[in-house]
Image (cartoon, rainbow, N blue to C red; front, side, top):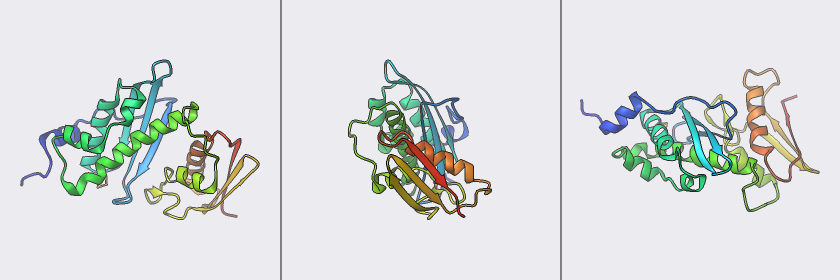
Length: 211
Ligand code: FES
């Protein structure tokens, strides 16, 4: 049977590089694909003096295309400055892999989005985001689009896991539709805090569970 994948995709799928996690990463992303419900996680270590990506690791819960793209973008990004790495596109990653079947483009988009989001996470945590837009409900929702609902592999907004968001006096309260003793409750809480705590005008993030 002929394969829809290039030899390079198959090689990277079978022997992916830079798989895993980094202890105390400087930037983190977990991105999910609305097209297929798969997920990819990416960790970065950045040299604060040079702003170069010193280490990068990923874990994919997606298909062969996603694993191969995750692998190739880690190689493309390693050693580059965060500004250079931000410019890597899914098309470049797909070209580097010798092409991907058109129906699989969203898989490489997912991996590249994870790289961009991990860089953004690093920049937010280090006060490098220039526009100091005040945190409104809309801004908070934009950030929460990058928190995955582990039950579905899609974000917590799309899956209605977030019931309410309130912002008052630099405190943001997010109510989630999960019981406190649910197996994913603490992971979701941690991810929500992770995305909102770096906001420059937020001092506390409270996550409330279903009563
Ligand atoms: Fe889901 Fe490829 S089909 S990541």
